[in-house]
Length: 425
Image 1 (cartoon, rainbow, N blue to C red):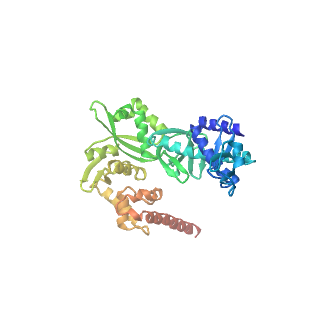
Image 2 (cartoon, one colour):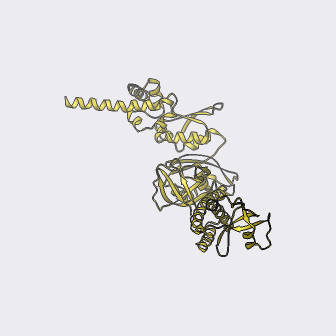
Image 3 (cartoon, rainbow, N blue to C red):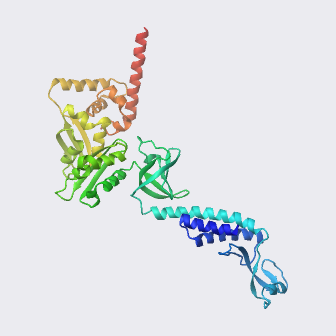
């Protein structure tokens, strides 16, 4: 057992990079606790481990006495002289007090102490190694799932990809290799945890830094990013060198650079946009290829209202309002998009009819119907395809989004029942 213990110490030192002396100290602490139980409260008890043979001995310091009153603290003079021939009363001598069956006890305790200390040391090594790697991209293998969280094997350590840091359109398989952004190293309930992310916008920023040398060397600066993970990202770039086109450099020859990033993001759409200090130019670039007609800028409240021709409205707003929403996030301004008022009776009538149609739905007011139509949601079918988050950014809707969607679903149910009753009669 003793040589086996030394072999284990050497193995863990090589495997985990934990000093043999540190492990030995942990084992000694554990064995000392076991020795105290077996021997009793012996005076100045310690445990020695011979680092050559692995022999374990329990040693106590006892006082030489003419008459032994406490065997845990004292030793008789005749017994003391067997150990130290010149011993005299009052001397303190070291006496081996190793229990007869201590080898079996020591073996179990030593192994347990080793495992506990290794686990503790591993956790501290995680923190020491990864605290300076926050913000980097790492590659790992999907090891297992814990509910909706994913455990990623990084080689020496395991990391956590929480459900809320996953991309909703991605599915992972055990054994699959994926790249993630190191978001944080936190002290969890069971020690330090490496928190990974694929949904964080900084993951995309880091991919651009790795792919585009002009970003890495500081020629091109990333001025902002807005992301809906799995669907679309808008990233604004600016060149510090007039000779370098920031968008062209990021897209790369034949689009190769941005294609590599899109591939890593599993075909998430990525729009590279030229940043401008002029909010009109910036918003125009962010909403492209939609063509904007006019701007109404409110500098004080950082709000900008843009108008587009009716045929450009859906393109400017985007599917479920995504284009407008991402533009607002990217610019830091509240962006409202409205159709240009065309002085033709036909268009006005269409708008009025759409408002009237939505306002006829129980639970939707005329003001809300007007706001919905101007946001591009002109029919009951549009509402059924929308989500609560799509409506939340529309003025006059806000916290009524859920109620409006519920009213739309109820109207469909009512119409379905009505059609059924008509066909039966």
